[in-house]
Length: 98
Image (cartoon, rainbow, N blue to C red; front, top):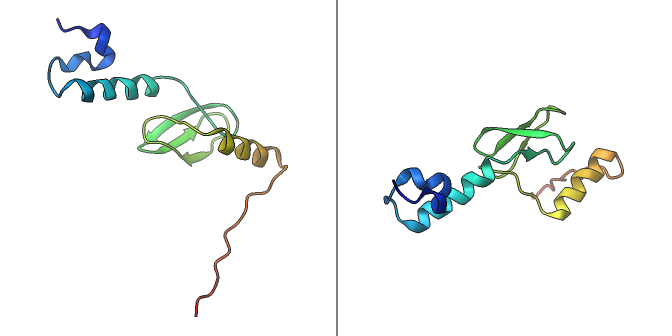
């Protein structure tokens, strides 16, 4: 059996595909298996397809990373401000370019 403790979930590939590809796969899969948090309500989000996520608690559908949700502190603060009603989301205004 291959050394699966080092390669974690990518140990199933054995010696195929190269070490760096297997390490990258193992790091992505370990993040993907963690419970993902909704940026709006803090509930559990579930991935429906590549980059599309649904929150089980608030029912919102939103876009994020393909395999896991990761947000910067700034975007997290904006989402919390919008949710609490302190800040309204800005709408884009299209200018006529005639």
